[in-house]
Every structure is written in structure tokens, then in C-alpha cells.
Image (cartoon, rainbow, N blue to C red):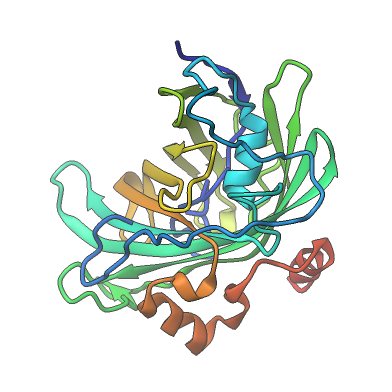
Length: 314
């Protein structure tokens, strides 16, 4: 028997990261990348000891059944941010890494390989309130050579960079989850429609979480005017017992504008990824770029003050 608790949220991994300073695209979390070797690791988790309302979800095959109730808020906090104690927890933060392909709709032409990661940690503010402190970076690579792209048809291509984000999650009395974007490169608080998203157990050892996001945002006149429109869907899969040899995974798909590749919402992006607990486990070519130019992305923002300082500089 499956259960279907309701969650209200969005922006949970990479959401709307597609709107950077050049209106490029991005949450949130690969299977096969061109010229890349990204494979899940059997050492993906550490056992955190920090105090938190997010308890571990042990699996006892003699006592657990498919009807056992799992709290999506608890599982979400541990899976996404490493909150809690025991398997799956990591007070230093967790990485969501992966990649995929940017396509032209509707020909299916490959425009670019898309890869990168998000690094975030959680802060317990109350039993029903957690705060996400994170940053993310994604690169576009040539679909033929695998090299990082710097231009497309004469226009500059830059990586998507969010130096810091602060997102709050709240658990309501009915168990639903809502969010508020407290700080981000884009002012998205109260801008996106509030969508209900569902979670359910598929058997006793797999929770599926589906997150829909719809964007219809005005573009400033100094950036050309008009509206930025896209839809996105995120699908997470996690074993709530957090076994070390089965990391949580995420699949993300979207259709919308991806400058400079496409400006009329006719680009399609398919992305898949998984969770890691250590910077050293990232693919080598991503670590090379971090070491070369983005050293802050070895870890999440240290605290709320760092995030506020980042946006205070702009």
C-alpha cells in the first residue's frame, strides 16, 4: 500500500537557476556525460552527530513493511541537506552533482552538454522550520569536443553561478511543506506560483518526490523586456534508510529560454544526478575548474551572514 503525503514547495534543487546575470539556465542535481565518468560512490554518506528533529530512518527487514509511514519533511531535510543523525546525515553539507543535455525543440538537435553541482547544508531553526544555505555552479560543454563553451554563434556563454542562496522550508500542521526564498541572485520570493507536489513510497525502501515548477517572470527593460517563461519538473528517489551503496538520485527536465542558445522558450533540458558527501568525490574535471577559478564552491556558505554579505556587494 502506498502513501501520498502532499508537499508544497519549489526551487528545491536547481529551480530557476536558469536566470543568471545573462538569463542563462540551471536545482538542482549524472548518468552518462560526454567524456565524463560520473558514477555513484559507495562512500556517499557520513554519520553526523548534530542535534536535529530529523531522526534517522533505520531499516529492519523483520519489522518494516510497505505500509510504514515516512515523514516527507524529515526525509527531505536529511536527503537534500544532510540534516539529522545517523546514515544520510552530514553537518558539513552535501553535494548534488550530475549532468545532461540541452536540446533544440523540436528537432532534438544537441546544443550543449550541461553539468555541474549544488552544495548545500541545513540549519535547524525549529522542529518545523529548516534553512538551506547553498551555492551552485553549472557549465555548458561542446557536445562534440566536451570542452567548456565560451561562445555560441558569436555570443558569449558563461557558466551559471549562484554564489549563495538561502531558502526556508516550513512544515505545516497538515504535514505539507512550503518554502520561502530569503536570499538569491534573483528576487523570487512570492513570484512563483505555489505548487502542490507529491511524495509516495514505492515499496518499503523507496520514496519518490515530484516537484513541479512554473515560471512566468517579467524581464527588466534594461535586459530587453518581455517575460521569462519555463516549466520544470524534478523527481527525487531515496531509500529513507540511506544505505551507503545506494545514494539518492534526482532527475530534472525543463523547457524554456536558455540564452544565448535560445530566447523563445524553445530549448529542452534533461538532467540527472545524485548525492555525494565529499568534495573529493566530485568528477575530476569539475574539481579542476573549481580549483582554477571557483574555490568557494568546495563547500556551502558558512552561515546566513556570508550569504547576506554576498548580496550586499551587489
